[in-house]
Amino acid sequence: MHVLSVSSLKGGVGKTTVALGLASASLSRGLRTLVVDLDPQSDATTALGATRELKLSCAEVLKLPKHANVVRAIVASDWESSSAGTMDLLPGSPKVVEFDSPTPTKRDLWRLEEALSRVEAGYDLVIVDTPPSLNGLTQLAWTASDRVLIVAEPSIFSVLAADRAMRAITEISKQTAGRLTPLGVLVNRYIPASKEHQFRLAELEQLFGSDLLSVTIEEHSAVQQAQGAARPIHSWPGEVAGRTAKSFELVLDQLFQSHGTDVSKRSSKRSMKVLKGAKIRRGAIQTVLDLVDEP
Ligand SMILES: Nc1ncnc2c1ncn2[C@@H]1O[C@H](COP(=O)(O)OP(=O)(O)OP(=O)(O)O)[C@@H](O)[C@H]1O
Ligand SMILES: [Mg+2]
Image 1: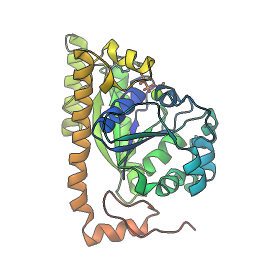
Image 2: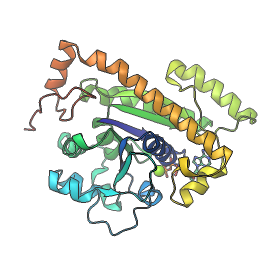
Image 3: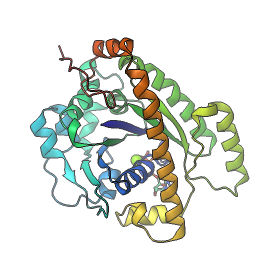
């Protein structure tokens, strides 16, 4: 199981859109996918069309991350799949704000990791949609993640927020013995014909170098239409939706490529030892490590 957080310290740049686009790409590839909606606004929960009555949400799971709670909270999304893939959801709730303190305790930081360790065998990819801040919820999402994808719009404030986020990843990474690494910065809502966007993209290239993903997600109304209809972008008709879907597949490819690099890095004895010293409960990518009990 691989865990990817989709984050940005700025609101409205497209975190949920990117999380859903990647979930759609993952489903179309036939992967067993889980979306964790850690944002109190719960937009991903709405867009995944989990319309039936929800028994439990992320809030109860974080409060008590035991197996029975996690399994009861997870629901199948309404996204239909023509492939062998599955799309499940750990629903969001306004009640998760309880865990969004600016100074989370160490115990709180590991709650999502613990919850995901309960369903580790059930999923190939977990995508976590996070709120637009670096408070507790984002920190506990990152603590449970292998990778963080930072989403940025081609605008000055978004560029600055992306820079802050990349620095923060380094800090949180220390708590996970280096398991957490940035996948990079993904530019969303790009309008190729806009001079301002071209300028900001060049600025991002300069600032982030190889950490800036070469693929961008363009601004298109088809993205909003698919979201409004609670449908995956891969099932939305039209050439533009098809191209956007392809862009999300390219991002997914980059995720799995970074995976490959990481597997060899982790198989060394030294990194195994370091990971065992941390509180990591899930296996690091394909290597299942011994579980380390919480004190
Ligand atoms: N590539 C795109 N093309 C068109 N519309 C987009 C695109 N990306 C995002 N949007 C729209 O922009 C709005 C904000 O996007 P989204 O909700 O994904 O941002 P967010 O970062 O998750 O916001 P928040 O910080 O509130 O969680 C939504 O209405 C969404 O449909
Ligand atoms: Mg959102």
